[in-house]
Amino acid sequence: MSQRKIGTVPLCCLMTGAVLGSGIIILPPLAIEVAGPWALPAWGATMLFGVAFAYIFARVGTLFPGEGGAADAVARAFGPWARDLGAYALAGAALFGPAAVMLTVANYLPPGMLPDTPAAHGAAAAVVQVASALLLAGGLRTMSRVTTVLAVTATCLLLAGAAVTLAFHRSPEGVDALSALPPLSVPTLGYTLLLLFFAVVGWEVVGNYGAEVRDPSRTMVRAAVLAGLVVGLVSLAVAAGLQLGSFPQGAGHGVAGLLHPLFGPAAPWIMSALVAALCVTTYLMFVGAVIRLVAHLARQGGLPALLDRRNGRGVPVAVLAVYTLVHLGQLALVSLGVLDMAGILAIADGFFLVNALLGALAAARLLVQPLPRAVALVLALCLFAVLLSSHWPVLAVISLMALALAVRTARQRRSAGESAVVERP
Image (cartoon, rainbow, N blue to C red; front, side, top):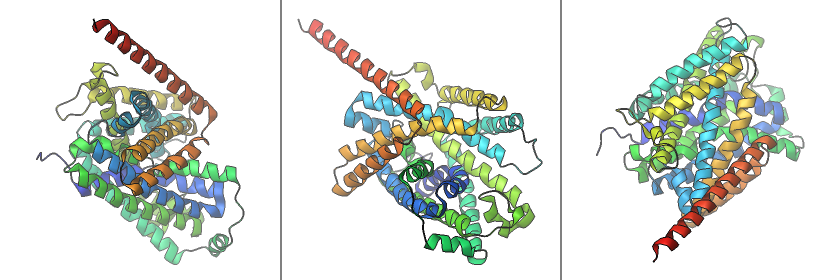
């Protein structure tokens, strides 16, 4: 067996850091702002959803343990049209999402380190972007070592800060508000779930690493379930700490307040390092999986063969270079004030949901055990409901992309049929 393949614990840490990512920093304050006292119950439902999500996509990954991941499962279940739609949706999401992740690192730098201007934040994000791309080119084994340290450190700090806050700095008003929940409208609930969906983004790319994992049929499922439980625990702890905690005025914004009881005035610096660790781990996991998927499609003839060019460690560096240039271009637009983080995330949102929905539907069709099939079907229904809450321009683009792929597939089938008729005599 190859010594370069990784086991359960490193893969679990890779998943944990990637799924926590920037979402654990951005989403809790936004959920509280939108849903108020309902934010914590919404987080609980989201985390149950996340564990099921992790389990289903890990099971799919064991059926197709290669760089194609869930795309190969979708192809087996629904044919090449659905596979291409899911693969291109994931590739499209990765064109936009990582730029927002890099901007998160720049936005959480300690006060006074950079001028508070879009140009300064865009330049700082670009530096982190290039460094992350170079780290990704080092291969999965290098990634697993780095992300193990980052994920464990971030998890311990967040859990410790939330525990201290809940034990010694609870707000009576927050506890009272949670005990008497006000009515919640359906649009508010839908928008809250749409926001919190980013807390579980990541599990759908688990299968793309199957070829580089020891004993995928066991390792991937164990690592995914363990990572799902860890992510759920950390997310609930952070959400509870923010919603029920009482923070002094200088504690900082959002999740930074949880570190104030532990580190006092040094909390902004610790928070900056924590955000950088989580965001870089997210980048390594997502972009690393997607460039393997794009290279896999190029090898099969669906994209230019040049995109399958790799370095000595097996990393598809040609695709990585393309993605890096696109991300840097978006950061340049941010520096010029043409684009912002909200606009980037709005585009990535719908693409992520389409890919996840197709993967869940494929799992419901391919898995033979009753329980996994039922869980996959429920996940698909939930994902479809959340997808309907996306912005209409994104839905329009996705619809046009689906129509174009359907027309292309029909032409290919017709052409293949005509060739068969010609060759028959």
